[in-house]
Amino acid sequence: MKKIDDLYDFTYASKYGPDWIYSFLIFFITFLIVLYCQLQEKKEDLASNWNEVRCEPQNMALAGLINPPEDGSMSSTEYTKNNFQGCLNDMAKKSSEFKTAPMLSNLNSLADNWGSFYDSLNSMRDYFSQFRDNFAEFIENIMGQIMNMFIEFQRLFVSIRDLVNKIIGILTSALMATLGLYYTLVSSFKAIYNIMVAITIAATALAIVAMFSIIGIPIGIILFIFVGVLIYMMVQMATGLPSVTGIRFPRAPSARKPRVCFDKNTKLVMSNPKIEKNISEIKLNDTLRGNNTVYGIFKMSADNEKGNMYKLNDIIVSGDHKVKYLGEWINVKDCEKSTKIKYHDKIIYNLLTFSKNINIKNMDFLDYDDITPENLDKLNNSTVINKDSLHKNFGLFRKFVGGFFGDTKIRLSDKTDKEIKNIKVNDILDDNIKVVGVVELDCSDVKIKMVNTVPLMCTPNILHDSLGQTKTIHSVRGQNLGEIKCNKVYHLITDKNYFYIGYLKIYDYDYLIDHYLE
Image (cartoon, rainbow, N blue to C red):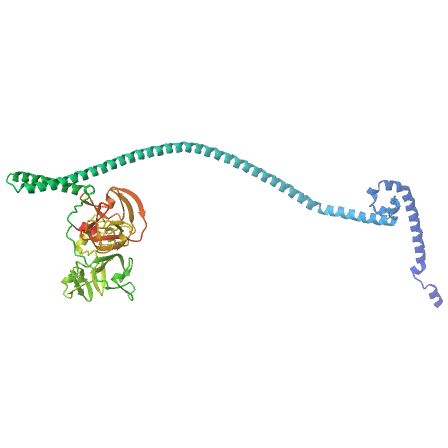
């Protein structure tokens, strides 16, 4: 039994494996022989079409045999290897081209669209460029036409300007001729006036001599009458033509109100109650107690007030100054608490304030303008302001005050000129006019105006004498020459109520308000 088992103890592979191997070898050798024979038969055709068939699977492994390099630069094995790698690269390239063909197609379409958009954009740019050039050409043509038209207007304006200049030249010549005639007449009148003076002196002397004899008395009487007529004529000439005769006959000034002022050491409380200043130290635009702003400062001669100074509550003040006592405005000298004193200082002081009064030691005094209720009613009816507006706004008092630019020249008695800002109290001006007060005012409304050949730099409300009438500078004819920027103006107060700038009679500060109270 065991021998039988040993006899049949084998596998299929151990029994038939060698036969399979021999069969495969025989088949493979046969395949190679057949392949070789076919290869030899088709070798020339494959070699002639090698570039088309080199990557076919059956030809790739035999590339070195089918189409070996003729120059012998490489072996058959190397050529087969290179051909195999080349075929793999070609297949990879074709595969990638196939995969990326849709993307490339989309990109090409996008590029074509962008090219079309770019072409359209360039077309639009060309269109706008052409439009711009055409519009510029159109504007140039229009501007050329306008310029041609303006050239004609310019020629017209030049012709008009030449005509105006010729007219001005003619008028200037006429004015110069008139001035020449005027100065000739002035010289003639001066000569006639001097002759009349000489005749008057001679006739007076002859009349006096004739009166010493009986026969000459009638002649003397006639000569005296003749002298009287000459004197009357000379007075009329001097009154009507002061610039001709060089003699001024001022009108009799109206009665002046007494000047009312304080001693220089009078203490005033400022807007800050802790600060006190002497009245002589107050500046323009300082603010006193009660928000009371100062817009005018006066320095006055005390010569006429030395016998009229009083002390009231330790305040040294003019006797005619108004003080509020028991609810009424009375003169200081009429107050039962005031005492008359001897006063020796040469200068006294006063102010202008917006409230029109000054509070000193809890007592109310009127400021320099000394406006009583009666005077307030008169000013309210003046033409300077709207009727009754002063009761509502005391600031309107500034419309009544004014002055001159500081560089305005004033002629002194010694025939020298001095700027008004440098004029001092008690200076003597031309025509023997004494300065009794100098005024500084906060005012910037300064105009320059030529009045009768005299240039004035002042506020428009300055009063002057115009052929016997009192007029403001603003109301008279004259050439306006512009304005001046300044922080303050100056005015004077004189013993004759006026002074001269050139040959113009200018009324002093007091008359700026007194004129409307008369």
